[in-house]
Amino acid sequence: MATDAELTDTFRELDGNGDGHITSTEFQAAMVARGEEITVGEIAEIFADADTDADGKISLAEFTVAWHRAG
Image (tube, helix red, strand yellow):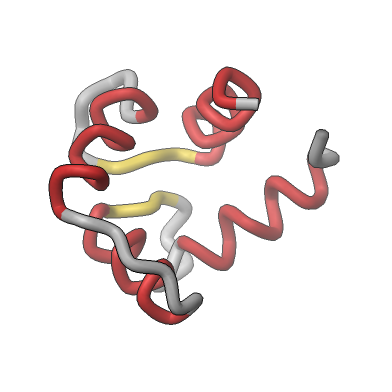
């Protein structure tokens, strides 16, 4: 299981512009940069699960809850 510091580091890596939220565009760009293929549908599923306040962005709190739920 990842530590809080590891989760925060991963979140920051995905938060391309450093505004404290991950957008679907940032998420896709991070996956491409890692050499991972991900479809628009897969991103939509991830956001449907993780973006609990439905604002179109994933906060660190939402990311942490989703990570633990998936683990």
